[in-house]
Length: 218
Image 1 (tube, helix red, strand yellow):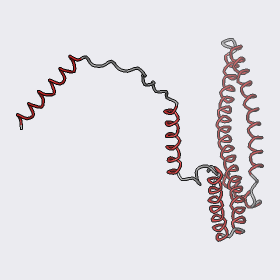
Image 2: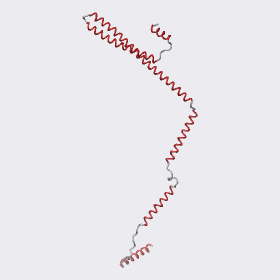
Image 3: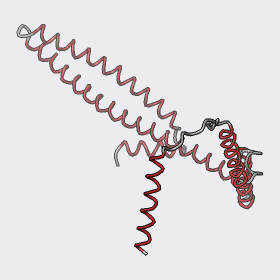
Image 4: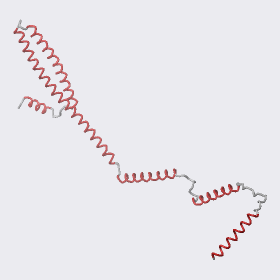
């Protein structure tokens, strides 16, 4: 059994109740801040060791090599811290999501209980009666609206055929009045000239010829 496993088992036996999500997040943020400061310190130390190695160079080869060795160890620590920060960041995000999901589920549970309480005070039969009443009142409102929008006192009490007959009588009366106002030309008072004798004789001869023709035909 590893030391880490023993550590978690021993801590779990001492305190059965784990920390809250807020407490764990607070601790993780503290750790991140500490490691970030350690990163900054190591980066400065690495720059110093690199400058020392450059300063000694070939003049003091041993001191330059020692500075480079220290720089390598510091870079290794820096790499480890980078990995640790990545793990802590992943754990913090997972814990934040878990905390959010927990709060969401808790609030949804409250809402479900509230809905259950509200529904307990509802009678389905009364709801059906209420909906029927609402539909009836809507029908009544529609009938009232139709009645209000319909013209009142115009055309309903008169027969259309009677009105058409009266209209024809009015048109005929108008025509008669128009004809009565028309002035006809007066008959001339002078005598028409008599037909000449020759014309009368020609007419009589024509009449005799027509009679003879009719007699022959019969």
